[in-house]
Image (tube, rainbow, N blue to C red; front, side):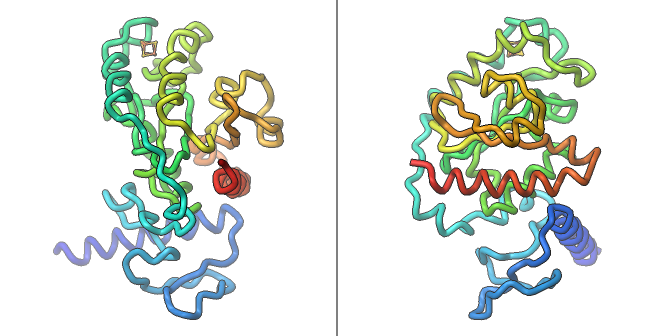
Length: 269
Ligand code: SF4
């Protein structure tokens, strides 16, 4: 029967969401849209109205990735929307889709350019597509992508309103690290994406992205402490969601980093 299935999926999504928030170090969650919006100790869940900023779990399936946070962020709506030249961005995407500059074109299923409107001016940059991304042509799908979606929603953005991409647009076989020549040949596409997206703040997901964006080579711990920037835009480096899946202890550090990311975004010009 359809109804129990949906309920089961919803409960599983709620459980996963709460587990993520706890593992990120949260001890309270604001629930409900009424006058009593004080944080409650422990994790209580109540049904909230549509569009409630504190609405608990993301919905399972399509709704989970389309953003429980749509319309959630009061500060977001007060900020001017970044006008992204979609036509120009589409042209870059077309060029990427037929690119044969480096050997990675021989083994890719398809290129993976980027996703999201970018209208908030918040851009997430990972390393390179993995197997799921190569098959679907969309960055950050699969388990790591689902975790990134929940991280984005935890700081009151929606996946649709940020922009998500990678340094490299084709999958390196076996998910190996991209080679320096591959980065050199592919990076002009990222540079052009950034010119068109005009980000207010950038989140580098993993050491590789942090190095590519900042141009300095550090350990992940050093990247997290460093004052990084890309063409004058602040870059906050944090662990790649795939690393968090391998080591859940990292989620707490990611939570600290994305809080900082939100502050940097809020204080950006
Ligand atoms: S990885 Fe980049 S440079 Fe290499 S073929 Fe793909 S789009 Fe072209």
